[in-house]
Amino acid sequence: MRPYEKNPASIYAASFATVRKEARLDRFQDDMRPLITRLIHACGMIEIADRLVWSFNAYTAGREALCAGKPILCDCEMVGAGIIRRYLPAENAVIVTLNDETVPARANEIGNTRSAAAVELWTPHLDGAVVAIGNAPTALFHLLELIEAGGPKPAIILGFPVGFIGAAESKAELARDPRGCEFVALRGRRGGSAMASAAVNALAAGLPEDVQ
Amino acid sequence: MRPYEKNPASIYAASFATVRKEARLDRFQDDMRPLITRLIHACGMIEIADRLVWSFNAYTAGREALCAGKPILCDCEMVGAGIIRRYLPAENAVIVTLNDETVPARANEIGNTRSAAAVELWTPHLDGAVVAIGNAPTALFHLLELIEAGGPKPAIILGFPVGFIGAAESKAELARDPRGCEFVALRGRRGGSAMASAAVNALAAGLPEDVQ
Image (cartoon, chains in turn brown, orange):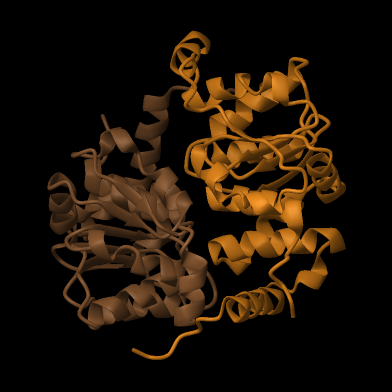
């Protein structure tokens, strides 16, 4: 077998250098560059940079929420599993309600998916929190509905639902009217839990592996 | 807000119908179609179908390994979190060794990453197992090295490491010489834990949500 790079610091440095070079990050708002870098690094796709949308204060709001100890609400276990706990500035709680035993019955009651029903269980934790959606369009749609109905507002919504039915539409709705929340989202069908986790990790710690 | 699809069965049916239509799955080997469908569904990218490579008996070998109760070895927690436990045919163990306390020291000893060192802890479980790599190129490279050195062989390697340094190369090496293992891999930089989990879920259960 040919030799391959085995040194973690060299792997990170070369990865981030590739992202910086190919994505031309200097096009983007200063404080968003580490987050964009982590997103690209998580999926191996430079071109997503051109499909990202965000509100001007997204990074600051997300960072401040984490530093204030606010919880991180995730739509699925994979997003939670990708959050690097040692990076969190205040031992923030990572909350996933999808597998709560009350969720299936609640989904039936509201005529929506389990992912949407699980969002209703976020209510006591939601005010000023960080929301990371990496799977279900219906979770994002229902969160926007609940906020519109007067429910508590998270500080920031990281919108990365993925797939063919509702993903593009739910993120377009978030970008069109974020209901007073800050947001970062990837337009279109692409997304996923790795991106949602990467966005949280960027708000938590920037790029601590980047030791150029 | 505009109406959106809330019925899980309708969402799955419409998603899979989109995949079937856009990916022209009839090009592909019969028994691989559910797996290819789940992979596309996991990432929202039809075009990955053209970058997938696999060995002819991959599906059968993977399916039989799971039915025989063999464990599933994952390179990171996110891959483990994405495996749908109720789909597994034999309550198969899902093993992630990355956070074992001996891993950092072992990584230092072998001069490789923690992900590579964690693969060495797979040895007692590896013979005939299902390997799902969704993050680290070095995990795939080191697994191939260990097999080449006479170590035990998994039944199948699901190769989906992602990123800019070593991901494309490690998967090319797997496809060039799978060392007597069956395999499925996505060529190039793209990959990720959602795809690795989706491949396991497909071996476990096909497409049970597809009730056309």
